[in-house]
Image (cartoon, rainbow, N blue to C red):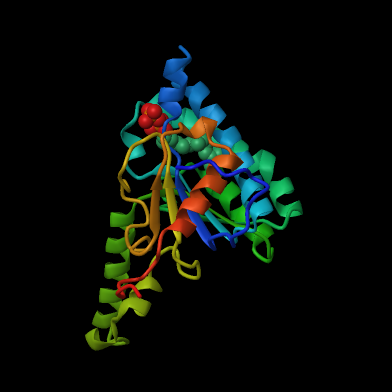
Length: 244
Ligand code: FPP
């Protein structure tokens, strides 16, 4: 990607940017540090990215903080990640709220510790009327689980007789996903050079521009975001229509 100076942003920002934050472990490894050090620096990058999104006028930022597959990691690493999320929600809530950020968490909550669920509810409750950036944190999130759960709820409604199969369309289906009310992402960024979606927003990202960058997540800066936005505007989005 070509680097563009931050000041030279002539183009409107995408409405919704979603990020797969990858590379914390490699960032730590190359420095001879424990993986948790990479996650800690990753949490710092979360903080600066939220500020950057506010400055750039992005309306929605979704961050993939913990996937439903991340439970397969060693228990100590899972604890470290949960600890960082706890810390983030505790320490940042007041400032997020002061800055008009609306916090929303998607993902399956049942498996999360009770105090984390309580922090999520507090964050969502306190910020729900804010009109600035909507920060969506995907926590114990996986698209397959989300889609299956939506299918089950729709099937139950059909079984109960309140809905006919003929009424099931894209809009109704999307209304049963956890992202209901959130516009689909326009731009999905994945750091660290990996090029896959890893069960992230599979339905919602159907027409998103995908931007894969080599930078490891702890090194992600506002400049990387600006570069990705310029790349986004260089691509022609046709949503399945033909060009010209
Ligand atoms: C991927 O790096 C990153 C994660 C699985 C977790 C992301 C978590 C954070 C950035 C910190 C806390 C989040 C918030 C919202 C405060 P990896 O460990 O898979 O890296 P690797 O592929 O290099 O091993």
